[in-house]
Picture 1: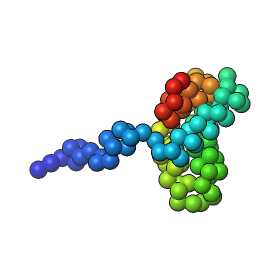
Picture 2 (picture 1 turned 90 degrees about the vertical axis):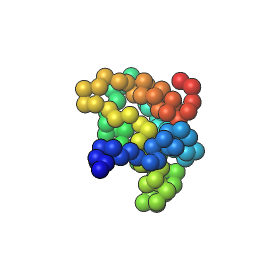
Picture 3 (picture 1 turned 60 degrees about the horizontal axis):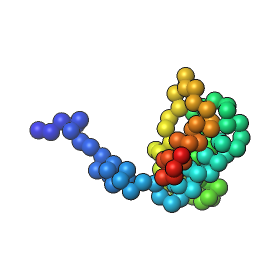
Length: 105
């Protein structure tokens, strides 16, 4: 009898193999642009990560639209979580987002 821990997410490999969608890339790059333009030497925090994903997904696809929700979820999966004790700057995080979007850092 299989154990519950034997199960894997069936869509995990295809999602990672294909990379972010075009919309996801656009949101990641917009967030990276904002972070590198405004206080790039400031410390990156988790609420900023959440706000950027929501802001740019909503800006691109409309408030409360299904597509905005989908893109926001996709982008949040690709944006590394920020630990409370992290010293990563906004500029450094922008580089991480550009890499996640598929661009060279």
